[in-house]
Length: 323
Image (cartoon, rainbow, N blue to C red; front, side, top):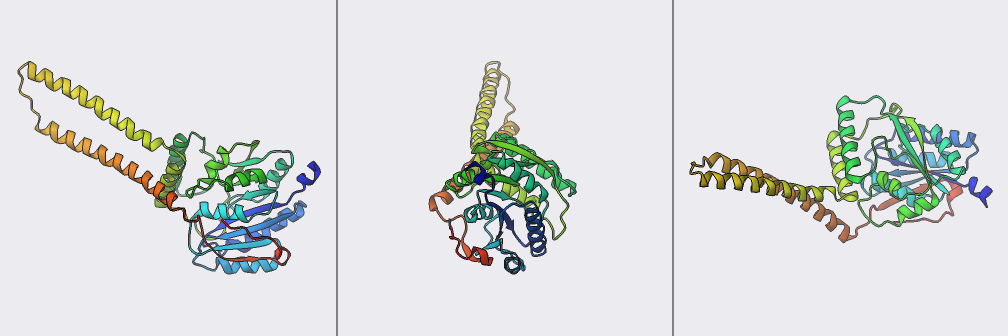
């Protein structure tokens, strides 16, 4: 049984959004590497509601390579949804998640598979460098990962979505029904036997990065709220700070009254009102954001909607799985 497990099928999941130029290169490169390494595999492209010819490129590759399958969303649902859709469709004994633009080096997939053969169930791809990118983007990304590491309690300074997961780990993730799932953190949170593979982010050969400062901020807020209650604890901390300030100011005002000194309080009162009002609005905003996320979970809408599938001739009889 151990020998059979070591030769298990590897599923490669590639979330894709407006990656028309990257699809053929990714399919050819990954298929060539895994075939040369004698690793049985399948490749699953998840088209996250692309506006260009991404789906057409996926269909073409499914006819050229029988190992290639594709899933297309009815609209853009986001990268996290695309990852979980790929995991749900994967039939492999282990699953690799990587970027379609090949900034995650494909040759590392072979190293991950060999480690899986040795018994590891989660193989994390960790960055040794971020490669060439806009300095402002680098600063924003470092700030995001620092903030989210403190909020989640998991060191994510070098974390990435580039991972290999054993079938048991995949099934565990798929059993989690939360809609705003944070794959990068959840795949570490579930535990199992874990090791790491270091890699350097490769230059992008096709297209442009889909991440902007605005999308990074939105990504950070969504994932912090989905994985941590730290912002709600911040509300409590701000309340304590305001209470302490109020006690100190109250004592000082009482002393001024007892000593008979006139209290020059107009400017102080205005500033205090502005400060306390701002803190209250921030606290209400944080609480409101969490309530909005609770509302989304309660509605129990699906993470994504699959509009179309394509697959190579060897996969015609494969069972379809939906979430």
